[in-house]
Length: 171
Image: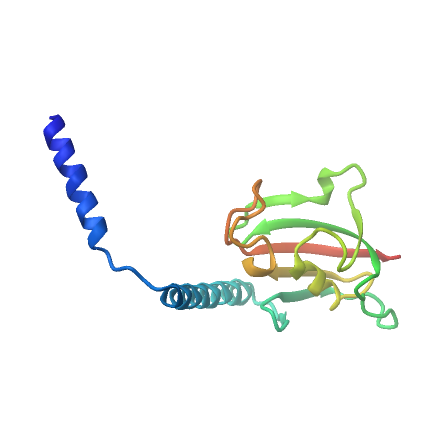
């Protein structure tokens, strides 16, 4: 039995040595192409999610999509980086899995400064397209959310996140 296991181990080791060795440039090109394909697939998943629901979405230049359901007063200005905001939201995945909600906090809302808080960069970007009183769905691709690692708690690696957000106040 041990001879059989040993023979199989050494035969696998020989096969591994036969694998092609890639240069750093070849590996870089392979990884870049892999990331491009993954990004394109994720964008298609987001577009299909929006299409299945019959929503009209605004796309930003970085792959974030915003679907506004209610708009605040048109005389209120858009939110800018550096503005403090008070929001309520839920965060889920494209499959509907609920990850986080401000209802789990005592205040049922959070306050933070746009572009300065430790939140997804895609959320900060989306907020600059919204006003006080807006209610929106914000779809953030993984590269603008939690990326390769997820958040190490409830959001898995390489996951698109969906914010259902209401802008309660701009302070």
